[in-house]
Image (cartoon, rainbow, N blue to C red):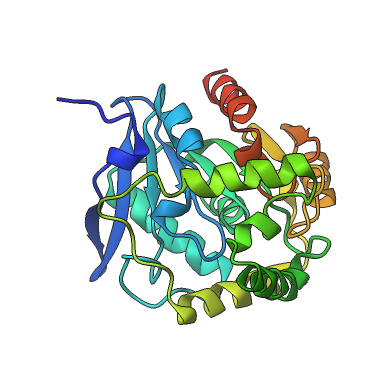
Length: 280
């Protein structure tokens, strides 16, 4: 059987979970502990940086998916992080996995924390990127930041992620354009964009997460790699330092002159560190 190692070539599959079809893609070698990718606000399957997916899939099985009501997945998108986590666990178990690694980016990092708290035996290791804890600094401001930067992007004919994920320095903007171009590499069978309803439900979930009482993160005993840019405007970088302090077995990496999408800007360095962490 041919092993698919390029995300742009991975077929989109579907699995039924409680009467709703979930869309997903998988690639990389069979066997071992799969790495489940948990996506960011407004993202569908095509919003993962192929350099990150392909880099990790060179040595590990990678599975990306659209949660309920997002992209090509059916149903109504949840309005809470906890409900998103429950759907993610149902998806993982429907594929037959009882031991996984998680890579949660932004909103996906919130979801990953809930999964690790509620299903500790399911999770082996976890990467939390561009994310923060419940009640974290500035997380309840994601909606105005997102809407303002989306307006700026519309007025300048740019992708909103160029503003939201990257710094405004020359280096930040050059890498932003490269990232946006990489997202277009897949030309066949692209995913559906997120609906307005699902986007609004995700914004509500993020706002509520930012207003929640902090969780006792000491219960998360798994090894955790925390990664971010040092100038994250969406989920302020102080949240990454806070996570690393409060998680008992965490390592923190902050990339210089990088924003929310630091792992995409520094994809080569991130992939190397992620693989070393997952395989250690």
